[in-house]
Image 1 (cartoon, rainbow, N blue to C red):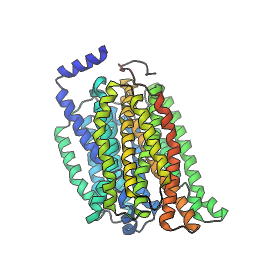
Image 2 (tube, rainbow, N blue to C red):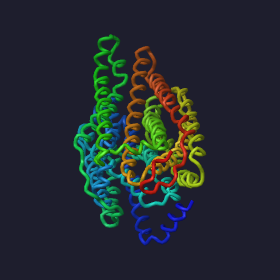
Image 3 (tube, one colour):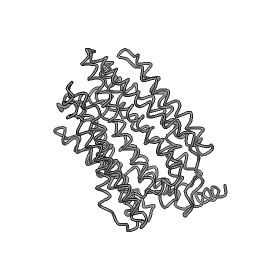
Image 4 (cartoon, rainbow, N blue to C red):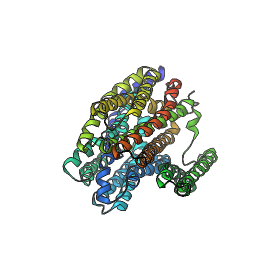
Length: 496
């Protein structure tokens, strides 16, 4: 308790408190804009397939490549946050994002649009660890819950309302306007940042290990690409030879991913002994951090898988228009935003189990309920399911992020933030790929057996949500084992 009082007193007399608050709010606002783009294209998939003449598996990569790029870039941010100042990283992030947004709006075809999404993601990848590390550095432990509640708005609400915004835009405009509307906002945030963002950390010279960068790229890219090709054999044809040939790239990719990730981890363990790791893994010595990460994986798979799958289901199985889909998903996104600050205050007052257990049970129940959808499910039931799912997820994210980062030593904040961001994006990309490929494979099987297109899509969606419900059982169990970490002064042992 003494440490908390000291932190609060320091905050009151800190002459930089107003500057710190301004920096955090600028980072929050910019992060909301860039994270919004992770899911803004989910409702536009049909229009993109028609306009760009591509299939469902290709169009999926406009979302998956965004998250995959973040997963590859974010590990490097542990190095970047130590090497460069707050202001220079903010400017770099928003410049990359703005350039990618402009390129996407002007893209003549799928390849350029995909490249633009990669550039966008590179900027986004820098922003989120920068935001989290800045908060952990500037905000005293007693107030981190409510501040992280605002981060939860960015991380959960921005992706959740992406389909709503794109649905409203597509009702009257083409898909390119999703980028034209975001571009001036991004540029304004860049200009404000150039004028207002001040440095709040002291950069220091640290070497970058190029081998680690290469290994992480092979590891994460291989895993997500392999996941995206699950079910390819089932869609290739009835002969065993055709199925085996189609499945070969999946197994090669997954093997490369596993080997690359294993080599990356071993190299980091060796380099961190000399304080030279690209991504220091010592935060995993904290059981609270490790369990929180496991629960975060399951939660992100559920969130991003649902965000990408529900619009596909409502379009292709129920015949709903993009604007209808967007409006149906809006209440859930708004609910997460409204609840996030209150959840943060509850975290500051109580143990995480008070929030995590009911939250995980609610999410699990909704995922199991969605395994019963058909091509005649009423929109009202989907609205109720999405709002309930959003309630459950709102109870999860703030305790997970705050507890995970608060359980490590301050000198590892930048690396812990990078780990959290990497896991978030890999799990999101895996969830997107896994849900869509399971749906596609099952839908193809049902179509071959004579089912209508709508019934086949609904059957595929049921199978995908069944996989998600089973995976999320990990989160339900983990929720009972997460405790609030003690304050972590420099040099303290990891929380247990």
